[in-house]
Image 1 (cartoon, rainbow, N blue to C red):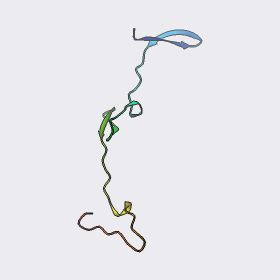
Image 2: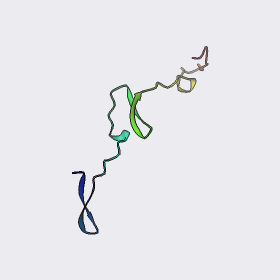
Image 3: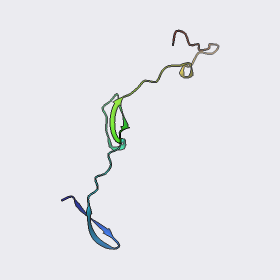
Length: 71
């Protein structure tokens, strides 16, 4: 076990079975978490809600956004 057969130069050859790298692409996180690579392995972390700034606030026509007291 641990060996797989691969075709090399037109003939079957037994080689070590390479375990596929575990990445965020094949990691399912529970809702509310997102996958990030940490120390070379996928880790589910809490989704960080981006800070709300004037850049992502849409004001009504004629209104402008100002930062007051940090919000």
